[in-house]
Length: 200
Image 1 (cartoon, rainbow, N blue to C red):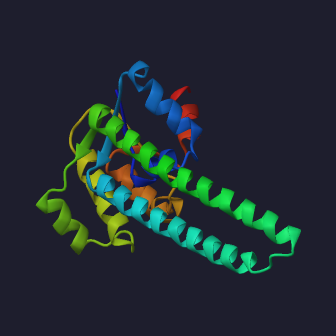
Image 2: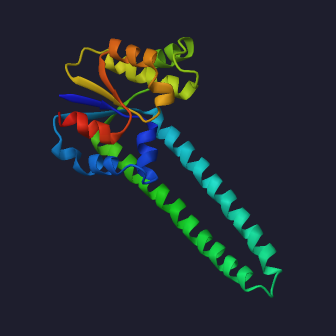
C-alpha cells in the first residue's frame, strides 16, 4: 500500500493546466491500486482563495487592456491602432475563457478529491501544534505540514510519499528530515517524478 500526500499546489497545477502528469493521475487513479491519496482539508479552502486571487489578477489585466483600447481608439487614422485594438479585444475574450476554464478545472479536481481522496481533518490538536511549533514561516503551509505529519505518524502500514512542487517551503533539508522521522519516506517535487518513482 502506498499513501500519497498532496497539497494545494497539486489542485492549482491541475486547474491551470500546468501539470499533464496530474491529469493522468486524476484520470487513471482507479487502475493504480493499492494507492491512497490524502490531502489536508484546509487545502480545499486555500484553493478557493487562490482561485479568487487569479480571478482578481485577470480582471485587472482585462481592465488594463480596456484602458489601452480606449486610448488607441482616439487615434482613428492609424491602421496599426485599429489592429492592436482588435488584438486586445481578442485577448480580453480569451482571458475570460481562460479564467472560466481554470475555475471549471479546479472544481473538477475538487470533485475528484471528494470521490477518491481522503481528507485530513483539521483537529484542535493539529491547529494548536501548528500555532506553537513553527516549522515553516508561512502559517498556511505550516498548518498543511503539521496535518500531514500528524497523519503520517499514525501506525498505518504503508509507504508514504509527499508530493509538492513548493520546494521553497517543503523541500528544505530540515523539513525533509522531519517528514522522514514521521514516516514519509519520499518527498517529490512533481507528479512526473512521482510516476517515475512509482514505476521503480
